[in-house]
Length: 347
Image (cartoon, rainbow, N blue to C red; front, side, top):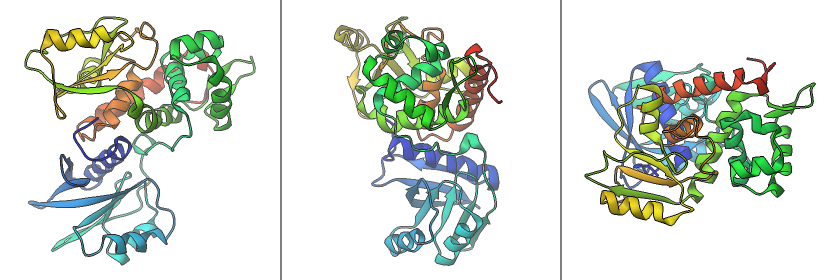
């Protein structure tokens, strides 16, 4: 959940594009919350320009652009937000008068004396939207477990199922799918390993935001007395902004995201009662269902594993979170590369 009207995966792409625009041009922008449609505000030369957004993961055919231009022509100003556009696609957007920004920092903006045109930037892998994944929610739970504890790549199906909170029946098919995509492989010693840690992380985060998180029980609350709450190991842990602040010391939290073991309904009920929580759509306290075996992966307590915090930040739609998410991603990938299970993986 977030305060924007973008779905979580689109909010992540818009956030990355705004951060890339700032890097390439110095233009500041932000997502407008609670609007009738997905909107952004760009601050350029003392002016504030509001755009409705057309978010596209990939624009690789010329035929898509005239259709977009026609569909949005004559209405509110529309901004195409996409993965990195080729110079040819950027030029075609300009010919059609279709303003755009992308996740590499390329841009075309043209409004009453304001003219911005940037092309040729290919972007950094850390800012590219992850490739869409066909992973099922069960497979995403398994990927979460591998990121938290790479040793589980070679654990028994029974142990893996216990920690990940899945059935043993889905494991073989999910492993085959990961291997077919080149994300995991088998070394000379016959043991499985993650072959592409960065891509594995980003595929998991994208899949979590788009496929797993929407299925989880989630609640928003307001409370004037929540500062004294603290998590209990094996039952609850910080995610989101508070978790990121704890791990990086580089964020001032405005919201509190808590992952809670909801297999015991009494835990949520007692929290609501003790801290006077009131359900509120834009409340600053978010409680999300733990989707793994709650006593597992407690090495990071009082936070959840960092790759879950990384996904929370990407899905928030808050530009402040981009550098912190990048910092976490670098640390996660480095830890994976140094894991004994990944010895020999290209860095």
